[in-house]
Length: 140
Length: 140
Length: 140
Image (cartoon, rainbow over all chains, first blue to last red; front, side, top):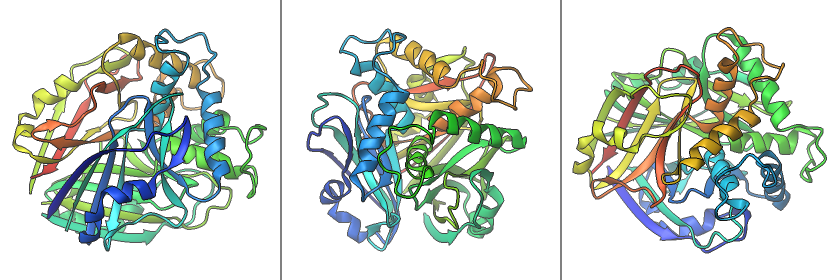
C-alpha cells in the first residue's frame, strides 16, 4: 500500500468555473504507479471550491457561474460578513455548497473518471490569486 | 491493507431521488472481509449524483425532487447549455450541488451508516438510463 | 499502513453553524502518529451536516444560517414531509446540499487544513441533540 502526498499552487484564474484536470495531473506523475486506489484532491481555501462536471462544452461553466450568482446573490442585504466586498460572504457560501475536496478512484494508473467528467476549480472571488491544493493518493 | 475495486451499472431509474443502498451492497460482497476501512462510491456521470439521506419515508425523496426543481428551475432563461433539452443544464448544476461521490466508513464488515441513513441515486435527467458506479474499498 | 477508527458523540449544539475542529481533534490523539494520510469525518444523521469554512469571524457562521434559511425556506408550501415540524424536511435538504462527510489530508501528524479553514457542524434542527460522528484515519 502506497501513500503519496503532494502540495502545490494552481495557476491563478479569473472568477468562474475552470477545468483543471490536466494541471492537476501534471503535479502527480506518480499516479501511473497505482493500479487500484483513490486520489483525494483538497483545496486549502474557504472562497474557492472543487467540483466534477462536464469537460466539453464551455457553456456549462458559464451557466454554472450564472446560476450560482443567482442562487447566492451579491446584492442581497442579508449578509453581515462583507469586509472584503460583495464577493466575500457569497464566496464562503458557494464553497460550502460545492465542497472543498474530491475523492476519485484510480484504476490502472489513471483517474477513473467518466467520459464527460472533468475536475473544476470554482473560483468565487473576483481576485482569488493562486490556490493551494493538497493531493493524497492511496492505493496499490 | 486491502484495496477492492468494483465497477458496475445500476438499474435505470426514473427522474428523482432513489434509495440504492441494497443494490450497491449486492455488488460488493467483499465488504464482509473488511474490519475497519472506507468505501468510496463514485458515479461516472455529470447529470446524476449521489447523496445520503433518510431511508424511511418516501415523501423525503419526492420533496427533494420538488425542492431541487424550484432551486434549479428548468423554465429559467439564464441557461445557454440546453442542447439536450430543459433538463440538460439543470442536471449539471444539481450534480455539482449534490456531488459525485460518497465516502462511508466500514466497521465490522458493514457500511457504518446511521439508523436513518440510506444511499440515494439522484437522477436528474428525464431519461438517464443505467448509471455507471465505481466502488473502491480500502481497509483491514 | 494504519487504519484508526473512532466513534463518538459531539456535545449538543443549537441550530446553526458551529466550529468543531478542536472537539474533533480531542477524540483522535492518534492523529499524531500519522505522517501522511487522510481523515474521513462522517456524521451519522440526516438532519445535520459537515462542512469546511472560515474559522475566524463569527459572522460567517450566522450568515450561513441566514442564507440557508432563505435558500431552503421553512414557510414554503411544497413540503409533504413535515411530521416533525417545519424544520424537518428543510433539515434533510440542507444536509444533502452540504454533505455528510469530509475527507481531509493529514501531514506530519496534523490535519493539513488551510490557515482559514475550520470544520463546521451544521445543525439544521431546532433541537438536534448530540450528534454521532465516525472518524476513519488511514495513512503511514
